[in-house]
Amino acid sequence: MPGLESMTRDERVALARGPAVRLAEPGVAIALRNAQIAAMATQLADWMQQFERRTRESAKHRHPRSRNGSHSPKGDAPGGAAG
Image (cartoon, rainbow, N blue to C red; front, side, top):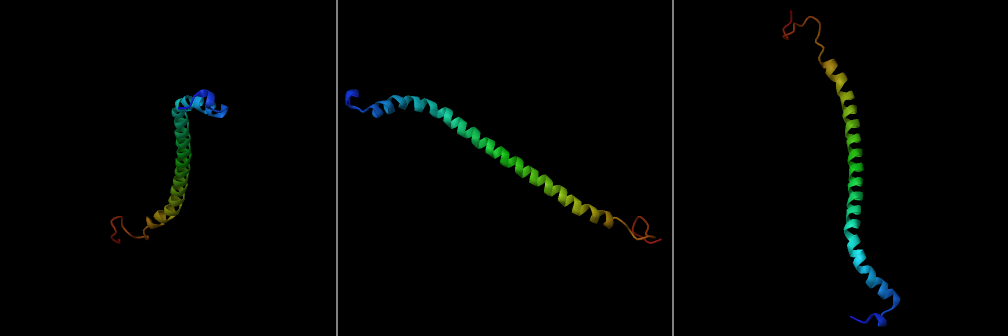
């Protein structure tokens, strides 16, 4: 390793900052993970809203059919036998 006297100012600054950067890395990694989690949570919330909207739309389309399908012609007995 060269002596400090032979190093440039920028090299000495980089050498001095090295341990500080390594110590900060876990904090940076945690911050990046938190940002990723926040982005995924937002995406999940969007997907849930889309799912709920599509479920409501699907229910609207199914409801009239089930109502109309439950009507039996007049004169039919509840068991399906005509009276």
